[in-house]
Length: 334
Image (cartoon, rainbow, N blue to C red):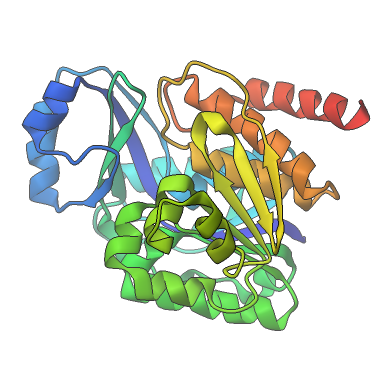
């Protein structure tokens, strides 16, 4: 079996909570950021949201990306790590139910706690994440399937792994295997906190000859140390052959050397931005691995990301993704 996308990233079960800005402030959660927490802090936060409306799904940034690609009809493999507990069983079954192949199907998980992410969504649609890594903090090279990496079309690294020494080493080992086999390389900057605190790891992931890099405008500003868009585009063009810079309601820029293609967003009322960037990457990589141009891929990615921010939750239903695929087919034919 060959895969359109082979990814490595964190395995996290997401629980979303609808909260007010006052609740967010009372809980001491930094807005719009991802913050790593320990088990004690997680227990404390759970007390703050015990009465909030909540929803549980499989998550993890690259996990969302591979599921999106699979829902559109692509073949995906996900390397990750869970523990031998109820959340780990939930996560494994969720991947397999979406048709995503995984190392979890071939190994017995260790004792411990599976990683989880508390996503607090405020009325302005912003998501603020408190992540307890649990077992995924110890992901290492044993999660890799080298024989599947070399058969993939794209190898994708989740930027959050820069926070884990063993996870970063595994991502880079997979990168080297993929590069030697001529597999295209992709990465995401993931979050401003990763850039601020784990920059050397991200620099190593980007490295030389990266094919695809995904980031949003705020991450690009932190990465480049400027808010001037022209300077950002010039600097980002040196990071990868193709850079997708998402700009929320302004759509996205596809930066390829000196060429910049602006692709408009779909106009929606955003209520939850959780998973938007992951969805964008999955849809974009689905399209490019199925022979479509980068501009066409960005059109589909914007459509999918727009649909996911217009609902609560980090993923879309199979029916919604099938409808988006049909829209894309019509767009290509027009």
